[in-house]
Image (cartoon, rainbow, N blue to C red; front, side, top):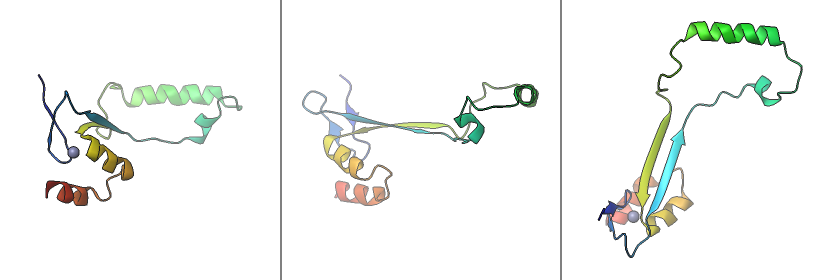
Length: 102
Ligand SMILES: [Zn+2]
């Protein structure tokens, strides 16, 4: 049987008696382009086609992995899940770690 360890407090989780919580974090850049917000507005389709063709010329390798795209996954015990829910962005993550390893 697979044993999991809480990524915050490093306590081993007993899969039979204890729920394991999975936190998935996805980080990627977003370019908010106003023209993409409203697809019904009048646009210069010829110019768009031109831009699209130029973009194709620029980078032929569209399947390259974006180095700024990141996914992370953590296993948490119920106690750490509760702490995480209070501070999802981990401003006090180091404090949390200190407290839970004491
Ligand atoms: Zn924990």
